[in-house]
Length: 338
Length: 301
Ligand SMILES: Nc1ncnc2c1ncn2[C@@H]1O[C@H](COP(=O)(O)OP(=O)(O)OP(=O)(O)O)[C@@H](O)[C@H]1O
Ligand SMILES: [Mg+2]
Image 1 (spheres, chains in turn cyan, yellow):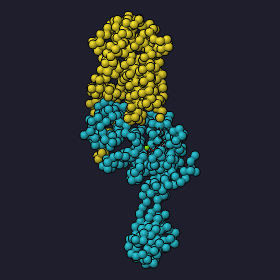
Image 2 (cartoon, rainbow over the protein chains, first blue to last red):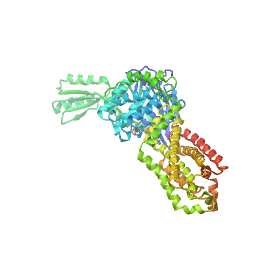
Image 3 (cartoon, chains in turn cyan, brown):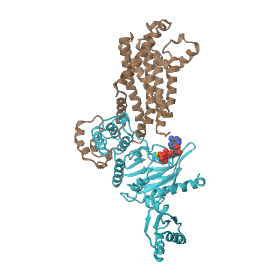
Image 4 (cartoon, rainbow over the protein chains, first blue to last red):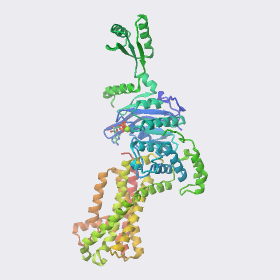
């Protein structure tokens, strides 16, 4: 087992589920180029055992490349990565004994039935024939594939393929599970089902690395987030940390008339905020950069005895965080590029 | 997906199979397997023998899954053989062929090698297709040996070749007046030699498939192998009636050795140097192709 090296990335070792604090995955200065294309550059991160890491990023950011390197499907060009203490380039076989992967594109044997696919994987993982069949039956039920169990998977719909692919991942008991956009193309019921499954697995100690385009998914599932842009990590931390760092709370104050709304616009500006007035609805909105800054705002309203119809404070969403990060990443890309 | 149970714990169903499976003596049970039947945490890899067996039967099931495809697959070389032997029956009286008493006798052993070549191409094309369908991607993230996926591929295609060879030999003897003077033993030897040559060739195409993973390239190579290589060998014409430069090519064409050896064995003649040359070249193809394929297989595109 690897020694506990948490110094490099403090924020990533925290976790809200069954994490033990020991890093299951350690990535140091990882890079990958395909000829002139730099898919990954200088990626350093660490994932604690039993925690869920969500990797976010625009199309072509390098999410799949990162997952494929960690799952030993692709060799890194520079840097190193260990999974369960084993180097992905030198001890690939040991890594593969401890992981399971659902790639971005379903990897099932189309000539076999759903059951046939699961039995095949189980047999290859060392299950005796009978136990392999029993396990296949369990997973078929678990993933709602009972009706389709004995149909050749060539005829499966996209979502059914996805589910079969996920089921194939859980044939054994992987210590680390890699899911590349696992809920893309799943219907809402299957998606919530997958979320439950991921949470359950994490609680039981499985480390999960998933990539996603859905911020809601990352927010719900992940202990930690990594945002990639053009192959580099542009932000990492817990969802809460990222929201606090980038996104701002927004206060919206509704006034009964135009006069008090205009007064508030001036007063809020004096407080150092950048308020915006909606003249038709008499609503003044302002971003609150720090948690405490709502207090002087309320105090000012109270002090001058202005009538307030409504006051709401909105928490930032990960979408805002994501968009803000990407704007920043593109702005700085010119001077950050190696 | 609504009931997330049996995710990890040694589920009762799997546990109960513990006792029954040791009694049933499942085909590939290794010693000690019984101890881990109920505990999936121990399923972290299988023996090489199991891997090759499971993967080979998988490919064979796919190949023989559709009876209609199997039927037409077997019929095609018989029809080609019929056409060739009829259209070019005049060749049968050429010097160098006349001694075989009928063009079909000259042609039939070459057809065996031709089928071996076509089946070997199928091994390469199949591997490329599976790379695109994603199955290979799944295998590459499983704890199985690099070689077993490739070995299984060549074994399955060699088994497929065996069925095709037997089918065409039977059809040729029954319907096309093929007279194998070498007797059943000579014929069996010719078929076995062809199987080995086919296995060697399949490694070459598997190596190409792992090297380029391109269907277009496989098609281009297949064209060269089917037409220029087959026609510039001793398959359809005796070397002595070819123009000098084609004869020169045919003499160094490795297929000539395989065809001459198969022909000699099937027709009860002395194969001479052609037999050890054919076996040696096939072994070199298998070893060289295997080494290249194994190295390329893990490497990403
Ligand atoms: N085999 C390859 N050959 C050449 N370039 C590649 C290859 N695989 C990936 N790339 C390039 O590497 C970059 C990162 O690709 P990657 O698939 O990791 O992105 P991604 O973040 O998964 O994108 P998406 O959200 O679209 O899935 C892209 O520019 C892509 O074109
Ligand atoms: Mg991707």
